[in-house]
Length: 73
Image 1 (tube, one colour):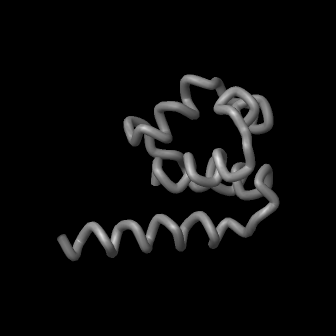
Image 2 (cartoon, rainbow, N blue to C red):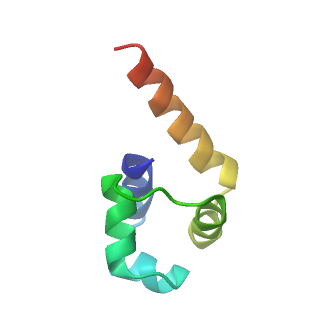
């Protein structure tokens, strides 16, 4: 999930701090999610989708594609 979140953030030109401020989380927590050391809750993903003005399913589908790709290795 981390790589997908990073891509969404970077594609919008947002820093981790800007995303953290938009969500009410710490910059450290955003970094941990992006590195995969913390797993976001569904609520957190929904908050991110709202901040990015996208559907929650967009985030879930991106993670699902990555998971499927990793299974083929």
